[in-house]
Image (tube, rainbow, N blue to C red; front, side, top):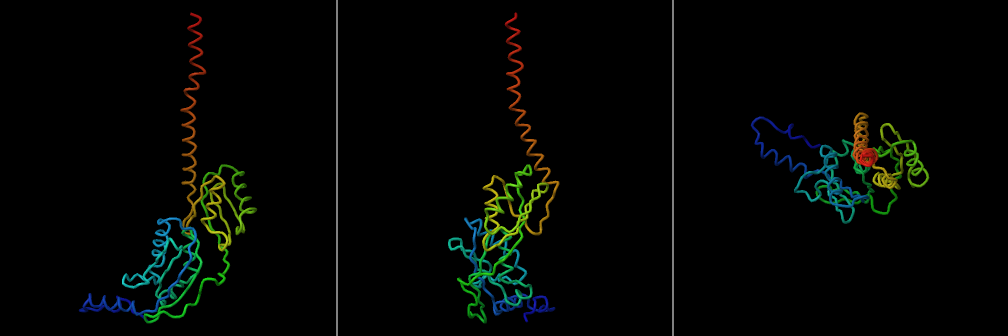
Length: 261
């Protein structure tokens, strides 16, 4: 088992030399490499968000961050819609990081992921590949939460619910709260991805965004947004009404007074 740098450090040790040896111990470890097909990427910003998100999620859970290693970190190829991620086997198993955990993180970022291939690098050489493209992925049911903006009444929520229940394949159930502007949708991720759900909601004339699983809804913030929206509408209506009221009430009165004199 690999020892940590703190455990190896003692008074009087040559720190630079010790760090170099510690880095070499990482290189000698077994590495698991996963390759995925990514759905929903359209630009460089998408691929960059996946790389940053997964690096942040797994940097302390075995992600290979050695720049000198050819399989280091998270690598997303936009043109091929594929991603490769490398993890130290021991640390990944200790933190329960597997293909399912990686797919969950990708989906939380708003994209879809399907495992294409998994293999291990043992002692610097590649072992047999245990998963290849063409194998049937495991069907997975997931519950995703979305913040929906633009709903004003029960007819709005009913339109969204009826659309997903009757016309969207992969949608299992949907529950919308008009008060919190939140929609909780249970869906089959092999048929319906979070980005597809957002697209379906936007096609109905509303705005939607995926709510991270660790983020709670602040009712006060939602109410403030709605109040600001109607305040702007009121001010716009007032500005448009003033010249019309001038034409209706002031102009005829002055014209009549001039005529009578």
